[in-house]
Amino acid sequence: MSDWDVEKIRKDFPVLSQTVNGKPLVYLDNAASSQVPQSVIDRTSKYLAEEHSNIHRGVHYLSQHATTAYEAAREKVKRFINAPDVNCCIFVRGTTEGINLVAHSYGKGFIGEGDEILVSQLEHHSNIIPWQVTAEERGAKLRMIPINDRGEIMIEEYDKLLNERTKIVAVSHVSNSLGTVNPIKEMIATAHKLGVPVCVDAAQSVPHFPVDVQDLDADFYVFSGHKMFGPTGSGVMYGKREWLDKMPPYQTGGSQIRTVSFEKTTYAPLPAKFEAGTPAIAAGIGLGAAIDYLNSIDFAAAAAHEHDLLEYATARLADIPGIKITGTAAEKASVLSFTIENVHPHDIGTILDQQGIAVRAGHHCAQPVMQFFDVPATARASFAFYNTREEVDKLADAVQKVIEVFA
Amino acid sequence: MSELNDLYQETILEHNKNPRNFREIEGADKQAVGNNPLCGDALRVFVRMDGDTVDDVAFKGSGCAISKASASMMTQTLKGKTREEAEAMFHEFQDMVTGKLDVETDENHLGKLKIFSGVLEFPARVKCASLSWHTLNAALSGEDEVSTE
Image 1 (cartoon, rainbow over the protein chains, first blue to last red):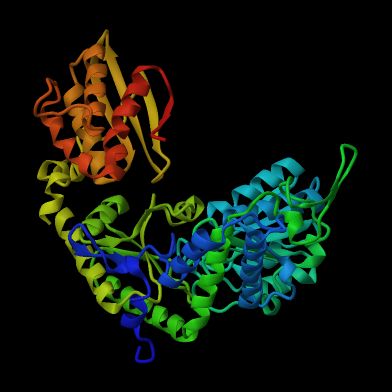
Image 2 (image 1 turned 180 degrees about the horizontal axis):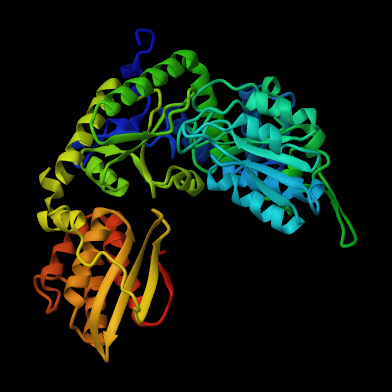
């Protein structure tokens, strides 16, 4: 990739320059959590060193300063996903909390006995269980949109499952376990024909390509800061105002009220209504800095580089006898799940780790996907724009070694 | 690959490939399922007692090389042992893989099982080595299911 200077980009991420088990770190677990650039570390440290105070409360200098910084981060989020209204960008701890918020509040407001919730077979547990709980509580039915052998949602089945009892569709933009990019714009359009809103788990999409929630027409779009080069504890639940205004609060307490008496409490307007208690202020400001970082690089070139890595890695691993790649969708983000005949993924993970290579080994919190492909687990290499073809070569060589050890 | 020698020793790799007593026991007196929720691995341990003695012990399930080899070697070791001896071994094994028992200096009855002391260097893999033993312990105690979490 001539227009992507990966060596220069790598210098922005201090963690990448270390050695692990005596080998240079090859970090290929980005789908679990991405690394943090120096600018985000600096911004977060500056906040903690010079600006820390509680927000939305104090009249004093520091509190106002912290509030301004935190709200500036929200404004950055709004522009990053092209949300129509900054107040519809609710800060949460991460995708899991955001989806729990939607499942709880939307469920309480809009889902009743006999209603149906559609969730795809591809989902991470955090986009299944909250809906399962809501379905149980509301007397509703959870229905699964099946996937095909390539790990793609079967759109014709989805169309058939949607009906007048469907109250919400929950689907990921990009699958965490397989990397499948789902056609969510089309899925949203289909759901909207029946007036059904769609909640998108966007944890794996925002780090990889630009997103426009208005173009997608997503009703809810939820993502984590720590998978997009920001700190853990930061995340966003974007929702359309038409829903958020009507949904009851998720958590209640400080900062989310207008008036409180023992007879009645009235709630504050958005976004405060959904942000009870003191938030993760440093993490939120850090997320803003991560967005600044993403805006400072050529995101399109970064995406092209990642795509090149995925294609290269897929070709290299496919060349090794005994390797099976799980998830072969036509549209994929840079996630490569694989298994080696007669070798358990945990053994792959440990042996790769000894070579300094970090991959995920396990069920990726997507046990229904593992059941579908009839594997207990897979090894997963997931690439970010700071990874290199040389690192892919190291992965392929180490995988070859795994096969030798277990031969 | 010298770093790995402590973990993936020849014996472990061989037991992984050809696990002993990898079968069900029809009419087992005791059996239990062990789950490692972290990785989704599950195995079932079957025990047939003859009075107070382990007459036969076997296992089925899926798991990594460490958990499979550990289960395989456990079944080999336990045949003919009394229940008390089996339980004592469970504790010794558990102490070994959590670093409470030093196989070189502390008195123990682990014999060939000492090979699993290598997992100490791999904290994420300790539960793989001990899953079958926890499952055995559950079976002997009359529990149906056990989890390493």
